Image (cartoon, rainbow over all chains, first blue to last red; front, side, top):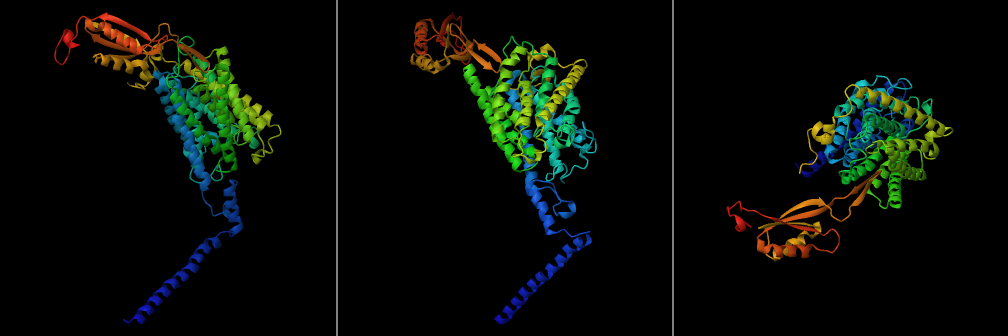
Amino acid sequence: MNKWSTSIIRILKTAIFFGMLAAAIPLSAQEAAAPAAAAPKEISIEQRVADLEAYVNNSARVDKAESKISGPGPGHNGWLMTSSALVLFMTLPGLALFYGGLVRKKNVLSVLAQCMGIAGLVTIMWWAFGFSLSFAPGSSYIGGLSLAFFNGVTGAPGTLPWVSENVFAIFQLTFAIITPALMLGAIAERIKFTSVLVFVFVWMIVIYFPFAHMVWGGGLMCGAAGAIKAIDFAGGTVVHMTSGWSALVLCLILGPRIGFGKEKMTPHSMVLCMVGTGMLWVGWYGFNAGSAGGADGIAGNAFMTTTLAAAVGGFTWAMLELIFRKHASVLGFCSGIVAGLVVVTPAAGFVDATGGVICGLAAGSIPFLFCVKLKQIFGYDDALDTFGVHGVGGTVGSILTGVLATDKVNPNISGLLDGLLVAQLEAVAITIVWSVVVTAVIAYAIKFTIGLRPTPEVERGGLDINEHGEEGYIS
Amino acid sequence: MKLIIAIIQPYKLDEVKEALAGVSIVGMTVTQVKGFGRQKGHTEIYRSNEYSVDFLPKVKLEVAVSDDKVEKTIATISKASKTGKIGDGKIFVQPLENALRIRTGETGEDAL
């Protein structure tokens, strides 16, 4: 063929191609138009934009019929998934190393085993009925079983507007795991592994799940929705006060370690303790900022207050040591940092930067006084100061929240500020009484059935070799 | 033959080893030990717990020598490890009944 024919054929092919494209567009528009025509009404652009704006603002969704977003919002969902990983990291290995470094060498593995045992046990309970009892609709005190076995828990949002319900469930699971693990500090080095598992099993059902429901699941103390309009951003009552006060009771009923008060019981590795502390701080960003339920400005506020409280808490504790005891110790820094994080936990998304600093100052001084002076006076063996840091710190934080919370930081609470301190005190009182009484019952029940303590020979020889058949360090 | 046991400051070990090599004594056994004499320990504080730590880290050096080398060995170790401060350590001399080199079967002073 000559070049004219070639050109004409090329032009024709191109025209046919674009012609087909042009014809396809109205066809697909017709297909898109067809469902809208079949639906009761058309979704306007304004309605669709409204849902997108709700996504960016992390606020309530528009009606499902008015949006084309069928699933979670990526940013908020991504942050909550990250936060879940961070909070799990707080337990494994953050808390495990923090506590593990503080016990004697012969018991280091017992701490690690107890943390991992709790993680497994609580996960199974959470899936089977824990999540449901905490977050399904029910009474003021406990949820129902509609979400048992994660029934209906899918990638679609549920409790939170922009986070997959399965992500929310796992996020909350990581809180459920770390709460009983905190108690391990008070009972370290002289409790049977099986007794820990049995105790935690019962404790979760009668203390943690009810408190999660009452404070976060729409129950008795759930802010605007509750009869007691108390607020708790990330778990001052639910996590720290329940575990801290329960730990005190449990360690009193368990009794002190053999040789307590006479023999040296020094931390076998302050290095591990510090490594654990760093992991706890970093993980706590997920704990506090994740509790905003999304990657919004309130999460940003929690991110900031968490940082300020941790740093100020650690520095205050260490400086008090330097002034009153000649040395600023690594353990002082670690304790102060964790105390700061505990105190700011209920307040993180409700107080401003100054509030965060005040939380840190309170944390570095009040738990400091408790752990360093008052515990000696009472003479009980809270081996790793769970009550001193989490019980006292959580209580201080929950009360400080009532004083320092401001709607300039979090507009959601403007209707709650009037009378907030009283509500906080009510919540604090209920938490203490419930935790103390119920833990006493569980502890005595176990003590007089399967027993809490190992034999003195097992305790002397070390829990690692006798309860777990392993040695932490083989030289 | 004598077994010379020297308890010295840990940071003096290299100096003592070099000094002994200088007088042709090249075999020794070293152990990390804890002990105290007149040197005071220190106090450690962990939150509410105060512990006094009496035992201090030291190094124990054992070297087997023939009778004619005893004085020189003691003098060498002494000079190399002395600082003049409390905690320098002590040297003990024990009689050594016999010795055997495992590889060759040599006994007595030939084994040293």
